[in-house]
Length: 217
Image (cartoon, rainbow, N blue to C red; front, top):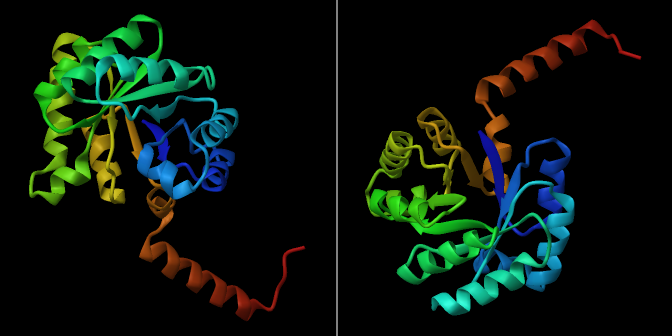
């Protein structure tokens, strides 16, 4: 499974990237706002830092405008993936941009039907939003499982990028189902290392070591 980091915080990306925990990055207008930086400047910095795909999202609503914006974003760096919404116009833009050789991430997917359309339109990635489905009392993991089954049935090459990840359990369940990629905030990825029994065991080891009165080195 590939790990994408869902942030435009370059310091957080660098920390995880230095540990080999970053296969790509996803951004969106909300994350750019939170970073408080110019979209071109921060996206270029991220692309220089990370070897894998970096999703940069269009903000237009009409297909022709999405295509134009997508081409502008693609000029920032060779590893840009243009992110478009799963609307009819977004699918048109996906078809045009992927036809021109650009990687495309189709985002805001909430149904298997939408995922089929994105694959048919040539999407590189489909981004089903797990957490937002959970928010309305629909199991987001069922969507991941449905898309996995359908894509496998027909050999679609579009990668399933599980998004709106809220917890470590989301990551584990997506991995068990067979999502190709997860994208999560840095805090969620880092929390994968946490376990109460690890903390308890370490505390016991440290207490016992202190009683030996020894030092290493």
